[in-house]
Image (cartoon, rainbow, N blue to C red):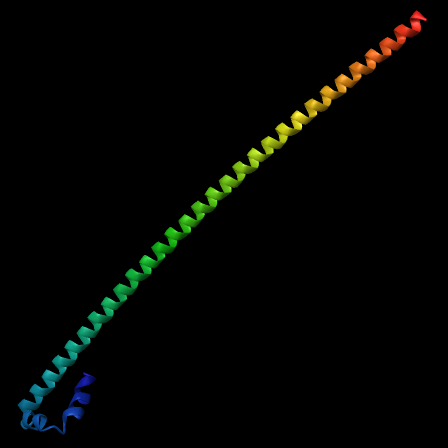
Length: 132
């Protein structure tokens, strides 16, 4: 283990370590305990790192879902407003066409009235000329 020699170097000067390491079997026991402790620390670090990665993945998934929901809402709003704008443009175009038709009808009626009056005046003039 990488931690074994470092742990031993760290504790070598302590009285407790010297007492435990006074015999070969005690020294092996100290190394075994150090290795067990180092293994446990590594396992805990791996568990913690796994948990952190899982939390990051959950958070990233949530962020992506929220972004997708927001994008969907934005698209729906854009579609709604585009539809509304098109409807308003159609209503306005219909109104403009109706106004143009009304104006054209009025112009034609005025032209007919004027033409009728001109014809009547011509008839009156012709009748007057013929009678003379």
